[in-house]
Length: 78
Image (cartoon, rainbow, N blue to C red; front, top):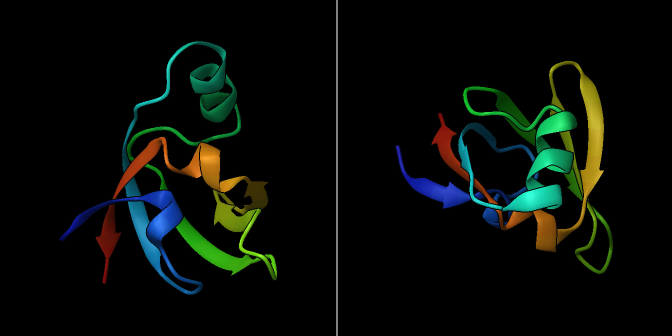
């Protein structure tokens, strides 16, 4: 398994969240949306210009900006 950040994944790829490296209110916002260590996440699609990115996590769709996705460290899942 390769350690990566969430913004580098391609549509269809799955990963497991390792840690959230953001600080303060950004960290709290991301974790409140379900981006917590141990959760499995899948990239659904990206917007035409690459921002935002849509993910499926815990049974729902979530769209976040690349700038926020950079703060999520993941291990890719085969």
